[in-house]
Each structure stands twice: as structure tokens, then as C-alpha cells.
Length: 435
Ligand code: HSE
Image 1 (cartoon, rainbow, N blue to C red):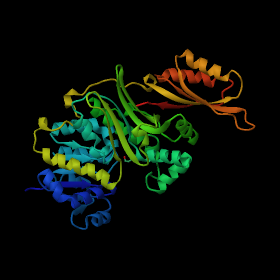
Image 2: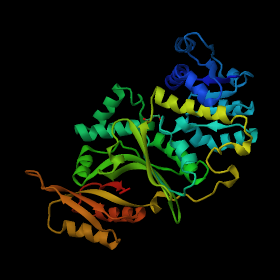
Image 3: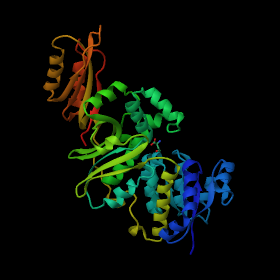
Image 4: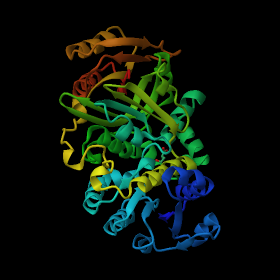
């Protein structure tokens, strides 16, 4: 039985995990795939590391372009990361007629349309289960498992680093900076954590899920993105008192006027399963018309969890590689000529509920002024807590949960509230979803 030959580009954390899983489970994988899948060549700039990980059993080179043009290689696995060299390598592999597997969400979110078009013309597969939520098979679920459904919305915890920080801030009552420091010490957060804490990594993953769920092209530039760096332990505590937890969610929703595409901290009722996903774990909740709600949970990063997804892609490609293009599973679930141009709503048109924390002087009539401004814009207060001023203080925190309203309505109301002489500073505003 001829083996499928894999050229592995990058043998860092995920590449090393992929090598280990393929080696450890090779006989089961071959029984599932119909033939052995073997890594025949590895490209890595660090030749010593590559030799160490592979135990000298595999050819190692430092030129990734030599691998994509190697006639012996059937499938190229791109685990280099980034969006420049990785893009060139993917396009070069496709031009050589190779199938490609990647876990690179930034690459697909930014250049997926170009990569899928090139792959379609070349008749090759592009598989990317590891790009979203690591080992959680959410791409497979959205693209194949839920294919009977009209998907209505998706809400996901799709960045483990942020979820770890928020979990620590809540359970240990520490500041954002302290929790981030712990995440860095434990190796969950990078030295430069911007991508994770500012919601950028989540926006890449959301872009990919929305494309598959709704049959739209990748549109990462249209994702509203707000991270967790400005959240305070007070808001996490007040949210808890109201019965909510704050999670960084990626949300995409079909509405009659367009699609929502947004990443931001969100209050979620603490009774929901997804609100109880803690630490670095990921979870994605999908609402679809036939099946209802389904929840996918698991490790969103790490060597072997992500390798689990990469190897699953290798098995898929191995099973299907001889199928004609029209019998292969479409990259984005919908046939490439059936993608739609549903408009993406700007954030100011999105409808949601809000948590507000208003710092006010403790004087008669302040709340009346605030509630009048909200009422003038048809914003209704669903719950409210006012803290007693501390000894010697003349300011209080007023916490409110509102009904659903359009974002631009809330922005205008907050402008009016912040202009009141009795209000101190900016109003803290966090979006809230009952899910
Ligand atoms: N940095 C990501 C996270 C994992 O924290 O979830 C890789 O996408």
C-alpha cells in the first residue's frame, strides 16, 4: 500500500506534536486513512531541533521551498505561522499540485480568499481544522456535521489566553496586569501578548467560522474587535453580583439586515455552560435551525491538541485525494460559486444589551437625570445596583443592566450621561448577551 508522503514545514510546538502523534498512532491512523501517512521531509530553520524531534529518522532541510517542490511530497503541512512566507509557501505548494494543511488562522483570515481560489483552480484540497480552537473539531462540525441547518448564530470563547486571564481575575480577584503576568510565566501568553489580549487572534478565528457558517468570503477587516486589557476586577465582581460572568466572545449572527461579526468582552449569564468554561479552554456555542443549540468544548491550543486537528486533516486529505474536485468537500462548506455577499453590519447597527457602571456624585436627582436620558432613547433598565458611598466619599458606583438596543443609540445616550455635571469620568460599558 503506497503511503501518503507529508512535507512538514516547521517543527516547533505544533509541528513536534504532529510528528509525535503520527508516529505514536501510526497503525490506527493507517487503518482509518486506508494507507500509512508518513512525514517524509521536514523543513525548519533550526536543523538541530528538527533532528532532535525526529530522532534522525526523517530527512531535514532548512529550505521550505525545496519541500513544496519536492516531487515525492503529496501533502504540505504549513506550521510556520505568519502571513508573508507562509502565504508564499502555500501558494507555491498549490501551484505544484500539492494538497495543503495549515493551522494558520491569520493567514486564512487575511489571504484565505486568494488561497482557496488558487487551490480550486489547481484542484487541490486546503484543510485547516487546527486554525480554530485547536483540537476542537469545530470546522468539521460547521462544514459537515451541521450541513442540513441554517446556522443562526455562533458565540465562542476562542482565545485561551484571554479566557485564562479573565478566569484568574474572577477567581483570585487580581488585576488584569497580575493575571497577564501569571499567564506569561506559565507560557500561555506570548512576551508580546497583543494578538491574544486585544482580540485579534479571536477575530481571525471568528472570520473563518463565519465564512463557513454563512457561506461568505473571509472579511477580517470588517470584524469589530475589542480586547480585555481595559477590564477591571470591579466590573468582573459587579457582573457576578448581577448573575453574569465576563467572557471574551467572538460572535457572528444572521439578522434580517446583515451579519454581525464582533469580538468583545461580554457578560454571559453564569448559569450558561459556556460561562463556566474556565482557564485556557475554548468553547463554541452554535445555534442552528434544525438541531437547535450545540456546544463544542476542548483545548484550543497546545502541541498535541492542535496536532490532533492537523492529523485529522491529513486523514481527510488522504481519503479524498483521488476524488474529483466536485466530490471533495468545499473549503468553506458552500460550493465556491455559491458564496454570498450578505452585508456585514457596522458595530453601530448591532443590537445588544449592556452592563453600565456609572460613577456619580451622591446627590439628589442624579439617577433621575440618567434614567431620563436612557428613557428618551427607549433604553429600559432591567436591573440596577447602587453601592453605598465609602466613609468620607461623595461618589458612588451605579451599576445597570439594560434591555437590547442598537449600539449607536447607546453611544448617544452615554454621551448625554457623561455630559451631566453629576457624573464622574467615562461610563464603563460592557455588552451583554443572554445566549
Ligand atoms: N494564542 C491562542 C490562544 C492559541 O490563546 O487561544 C492559538 O490560536
